[in-house]
Image 1: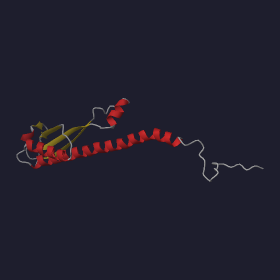
Image 2: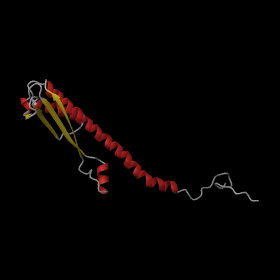
Image 3: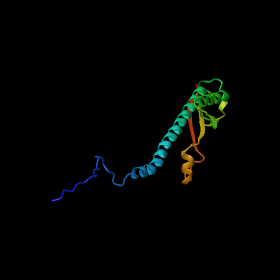
Length: 159
């Protein structure tokens, strides 16, 4: 009875012979590597976008806090504080909106005319452009070519 051996054959000097699969790993790597790199770069891109979003949240909070404790209310000081905070985090600010709401009636009023007890709202906006993911996804019909608008707002009562 003949023994059937499974596995690889042995060469004369004890080396194992490969069964025609020497290029298989290279082809698998060539197919999987671009997808893996796209996922990895996407993770970094979205982490950077989230970091910028958190910077916008903190800048809006800082601006609202400054506006809440400031007397008299100066929109230029709030604007410069937000711009300084965002430039320290290397983020460009596209727009800053400031508004005030009367505490008694709830009606909107001009920002510099806010009285103690009025709600002061600061909104900060920026556009984040994806560096690598955007152009790649635009090839497949994605909509990240122009970037994503990020923003945050904070409301505090004027002291």
